[in-house]
Length: 143
Image (cartoon, rainbow, N blue to C red; front, top):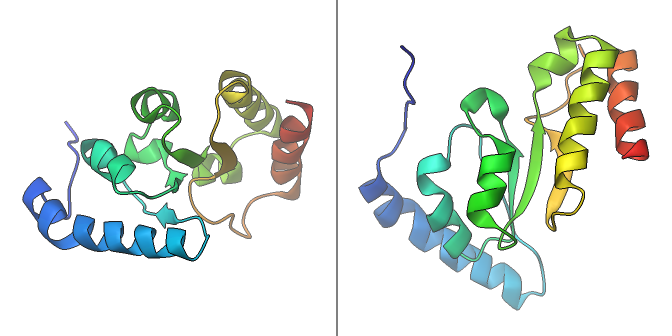
């Protein structure tokens, strides 16, 4: 059985990360900017804390790390913009039809939800076949 591995526990989150995240997002707001937290991995344990930190968006919602964007959206509602949720590995290995259908399903679900930006779970790598990337763009344009 695979379990989630956390690089920090809730106490460390409270002590070392949240105070700085809150100060950073507050400073960005004072500059009339929007703050986007990029983090890889499973952040399910910390979603409420991140949502309450003042950050505007969470980038790279990664399905491989057990971050189900539908469940995350239900938890954060419209308090946090969510970015990502397209598995980069699938962009490399799946068929264009499979990618198109997955993105279509995601966009149909998220279309009436405020605060969503379609994107990959990490950087789009050069190994992604052009036809797979075009399937992503086509689905985005249609839905």
